Image (tube, rainbow, N blue to C red; front, side):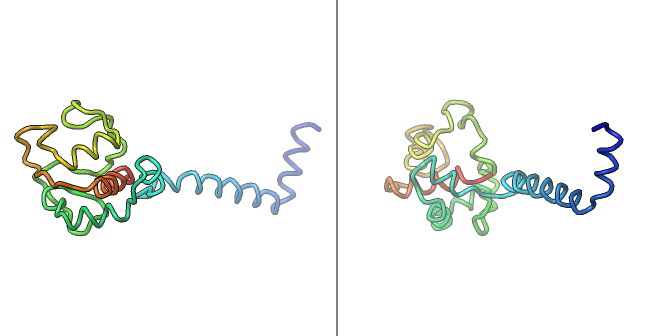
Length: 142
C-alpha cells in the first residue's frame, strides 16, 4: 500500500484517529504523573523500611520546621537551616562529607553532634523506629 492510500484511510476514519490520540495522551499522562507529584511514599518506605506518614508527624512533633523548610509538614517554613525540599535527589549532605543514604540520614537525625561537632541541630535521642520513619519521609519528598 502506498503512502497516499494510507493517508486517505487515516483521514477517513476519525474514530480510529481519536482512539490513537487518546491512547497517546493516556500514556503521556501516566508517565508524567510521577514528575508532578510532591511525594512518593512508596519510594520512601521501600528505601528505608520506615513509615513516611509517621515520619511526617514525627517531624511536626519535634518542631523540625522551626529551622527547616519541609514540604508537606504544616508550618514547617524555617529559614535558619537548609531546606529539605527535593531531599531524595541529593547525592550528599554536610558539604559532601556524607553520602545521602538512609543509613547516614538515620544516624544524623538521631545524634547530629556526633557527625558534625558544634552543629546547631540538637541531638534528638530518637528510637531507631522514629529515625527510620523520619528518614522515610525525607526520601519521599520529590
